[in-house]
Amino acid sequence: MTIHLSVREHDVLVRGEVSAPGERNVTTLGALTFDAVEALVLAPDGALGPVATPTRLGRRSALKLSQWVGLIRTPDGTTIEILPKTHERPGARQQDPQASLQGSRALLMRMLVATDERFRTAPPADLDAARMPLFEVLLRSVLDGIKVALRRGIPHTYVPVSEERSSLRGRLNLPRQVRQPPHRAHRLNVLYDEFLPDRPETRLTRSTVERVARMTRMPATRRLARELLAGLEQVPPSRNIRQDFAAWRLERGHAHFMALEGLCRMVLYELNPLVGGMTARAQAVLFNMNQVYEAYVAHLLRTQYPAWQVQTQVTDRALGEVNGKRAFPLRPDLLITCPDGQVIVADTKWKRLNPDRAPTFEVTNADAYQMLAYSHVFHTQRAEVRRPLWLIYPHLPGLPAVSPPISLGEGRVLSLITLDLLAPVPVFPEAGA
Image (cartoon, rainbow, N blue to C red; front, side, top):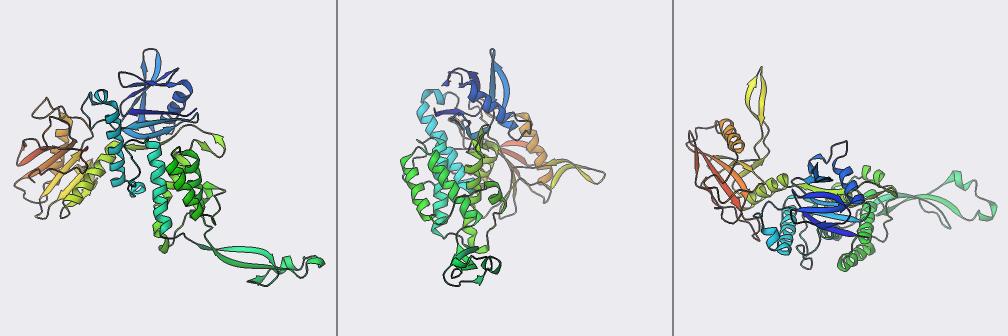
């Protein structure tokens, strides 16, 4: 039985008998489903450690989700959709659950399309990403990306062929020909190279389309998969997925196929709870909302202010030095250089501000101290009269687009900027750089 659940970041998953949402952002999972999710996020390798932390709810085992969103699939057929919620004011989810769910799903896909190379192809007009489960949206996005690549041509390569023919083609295969029985002496064993679409990249692409066709429940997605399989009719499916991924090599003329590697890996590994015919632990496609939000803000800045130089995660500076080595390295999310040479240091924060606590709206002291340290290091390259610092948060009702400037002394001015992420095209507000 296939079960689809929608939860939010920072929710609690509880081990129980039934799967049902609770009133306190708590979702109860069946025992097998919970154990599979727990094994995934608490694996000894720690690869997905930050996704959730173990806790207790009464006498039951529980997992407290963090800021990671995406999908988790368990071998028993359960799909858990984790959506963002920091962009909403507390209580919005309970007031209109369906609108809140659709808004969060649409927001996540819009941010992924803008920031993740695997989702550069925007969903087509007939795909309502807000109303479809995230699982189906991802599957359709994979097929859309493959469709775009196939339209630009399927990579071919020369494949060695050994066969028995009535006429000579290529060169004679002497070792086999001398062993030819007398009654078949009129047949020639030949070796030649044929230009075929049979190569690791195309085999993996076909396997990906076949797997999407099996996993989807949407008729339109299944129909698109059949159309793509018709275009890949001459391509055999991959017989060894790991080996073909290791052999993934594309020549210069096949650059349009490069983006498909990430899509194929997502379907053949991350979205597939069956590996090598054996039941495996839960699989996940997850995104760190801190990183997604940072990349999305950088995308908006580059789009709306093309003259600005926007750098992300600058790592070549430190707060101090000891014995010629850097001490306390700094890494601001954004370093913006305006055409007039003005430097703006900014950090993105995927957190909720409190509209009722003006003028700082409950910005933590640690965040303010961090910005002061950034200014001390990054605003010393020139004699700035004004040293702007930005903290960029999601917008909530009651918050200003730009807060009144907060003076930190010596020309340092901290501005709290909020982005309306629910707008069709979020506009970055003027902050008076």
